[in-house]
Length: 76
Image 1: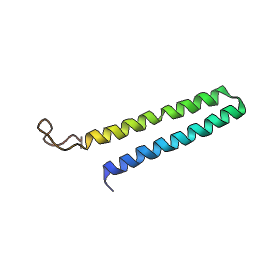
Image 2: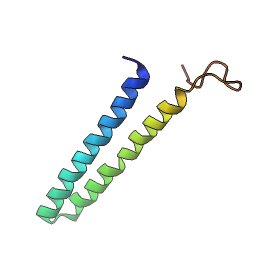
Image 3: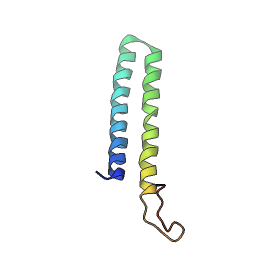
């Protein structure tokens, strides 16, 4: 499998898992009345931002070579 494709898949799976954990923690926090669990749910959802950064980074690094970057944009 191509490294770029694997990175995209990892990023999207991570986002989906974080959304699922958010929903589960939010539900548990509401049911139990725990503000700490609700706060942790929002923290878990914010972890999706790092996955979005991974996806954007992969997109940028997979650009074809151009005049300013004759060997490409990757950092291998």
